[in-house]
Image (tube, rainbow, N blue to C red):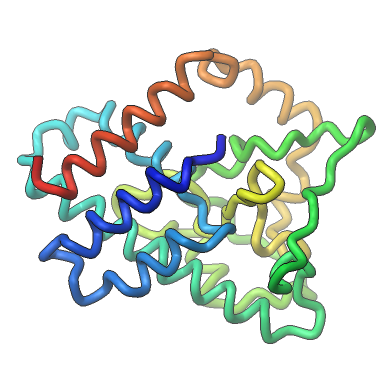
Length: 216
């Protein structure tokens, strides 16, 4: 799902105005404006947290603080990966300004770029020997980004093409490489996958989040 520019702009304003995030608002707002930042998956993360008893027991101020921290941590790894890729000779073509390419996928490719397989907080940190991924990132893949995060640290999205994007796909872990059609079809059999109300709930989550950030 592509989140509207209007909602992203409203969330950016709310983050800038938040006293808890003022020191970091520039980098977070920069990420929110980036066409590869996983804003839809962040909102799915928030939606998942809102279903959890512990989160709902928090006062609104503490909920806001937690979500701002998650957004700040997500932004930090996003900028770090983006800079690393842009400096590599074998960097991905979709990072070239003005040259966003359609995501791969055709009639013989079962992957629909839904991103569900990447909605994991952490994974087994086993990478090919020739993987160029820094050790720090391998540890992040294994341990996750921290409390409250509900999807892979390296999952991005493409607002241009519509769909998920693995930011370290050429260097990804071995478990990610072994996730194939059977696992994908099993995951797509989950009730939430085809639930038509998910999109409406995601938009409602975005509106709720903006209100929370604004102190409403």
